[in-house]
Image (cartoon, rainbow, N blue to C red; front, side):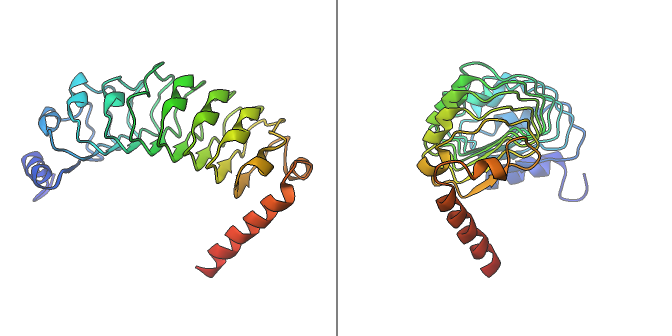
Length: 240
């Protein structure tokens, strides 16, 4: 750590700003002093070698943003998932193989969850209990299916499950009331809800490298309206 970047200086700055960042430092665990910062709002320990989080993480009840991407976590402790004020959680690119059952019910404020690049084979039904989730990123895992219960995510706008092994999208997903972007590329999808384009306001759908593609999508109810929405979005990007 160079001038102005020693741990004591970082801690002092965190007490003033509510933000603590220490990345690419080869940490195997969070600094113990960080876990005493009761007013900490933003914590970034990405790109380290952290294998586990101590229970004391649950005491940081003011946390809004936690970034732990590119570490060595194999699971998420319940103490982390008990942070009711947490709005963004990025634990992408960790060797996480499973998620705790009934572990998401306390995340009442969570809007963005990034679990990309992990080793997940399945998702708990409890993930459907996130009342404010907007962005759910699950690309590059080992998922073979998606829980039909995820249709209960009434605020979900973006779902990315590209580069998995998913063979069908549950019919219940036609009930995703807020969905705008659905990324399904590089899976094994053969079945897609026939009325999803009609019942949702889906604007962007990625189906590249799947048995089910654009030719099959044309037979779905609401396809023409979906194409109009997609074109309008593309036109908006071109204007920017």
